[in-house]
Length: 116
Length: 113
Image (cartoon, rainbow over all chains, first blue to last red; front, side, top):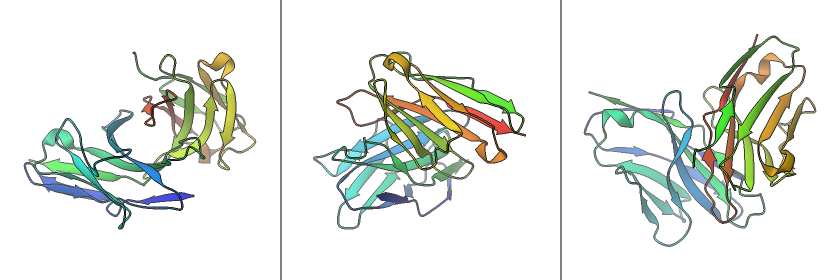
């Protein structure tokens, strides 16, 4: 079984400030890691993923996340946020072996609010 | 690629009524998942289809819930004798066999009064 903890339910920041959204997971098996974003009144969109290789992964809109196996973390960062980044962000894991049919286990989400 | 679609987008029903939701996955995606998202929570897994076979059901899926995926294409999720606790966003996601991320639809928001 897996679990995901997103340590902050809400993160308010000012525009152009840096931000870090924290995610820790617990699992008895190796996992794939994902960040999804949900804009108001929209479905979940994949932001970035860690499957293998470099532990630092980047998205096309400036977000990055680093997989830290020893700390079982996958924190999301952006050096300078925009108003348009206001959304709810979900961290998720799935069993790498496929034993759980690759279903996703999500955290409770972090609401990022970017203020002018 | 038109994305995952779900219908209806919103459903308001009275307690005790039956409701059915539909999900159309991305074409040729063999894997199809249903999740439920309540206010302030992340999505929780309900059930999984590989083509037309329902291979996994969560304990969250009580006997009042049933899901089908005839011919391995679209899927339906039916809730019988709805209860107020069933009020939630129901999300559908699909993925092809060789890719591990899932593509989500916009969801169906159910309100049981």
